Length: 291
Image 1 (tube, rainbow, N blue to C red):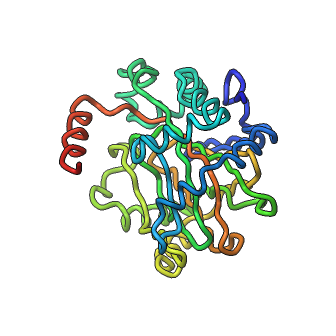
Image 2 (cartoon, helix red, strand yellow):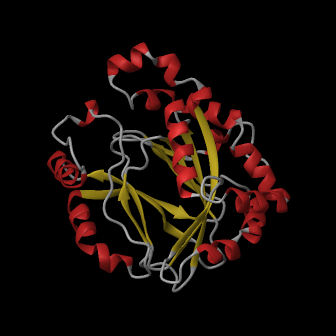
């Protein structure tokens, strides 16, 4: 299994503007995608899921031992994991989206600290397994502030492929509507111009229940009145949708119209900023308290 020397050559549609999002029609070959679908750890994900929860993930951060067991059990997982977590994957991401990543920072800072911002050693990449069931809603959000790239690889089963429903990316209907949303869902500091604000995550309330839309309907309606879908990635086997995180990178997944009581299999790929030494120490202390 190979993603080719440079994964960004897989991008077939790219949109630059308020934020950068893209689609890869054949991120994986059909045969490779089929192997990953057949090896997908659905039973392990289901074992972690609570009965009334419609979503489950396995990652190195939350379940390191289980994740390792899955990776070493199948050659196909070892192969894709090795490629995605390689330094080359990170370097290719930084090279392709260099200007977009720099624009995440205020002009003066990105001019002074350009080499530091684009230093590949500051970043790492990860792979996660994810399953969502019909009824689940991942409400609109802009994503974790430490994230640079988010890429979702779609692995639908036979009969699940759709021309939409992969990941929906949003743009504001108007600048006034955009500010309405930020005023409502930014916890503080919304008066600071977005371009000068510290990069952070903005999100609507969400729910992992099987009837999630009923629980967040009012919030979704408010958002939809002020934002429109700019691109809804096709949910095809081996395809992928992704984006570069910034203040405006609104996206969501709504499974209210997905196949009845069916699992939606995806692989989540992230390029993240490595935590600072201070944060690493704090995380270790918190983990000790929890254990």
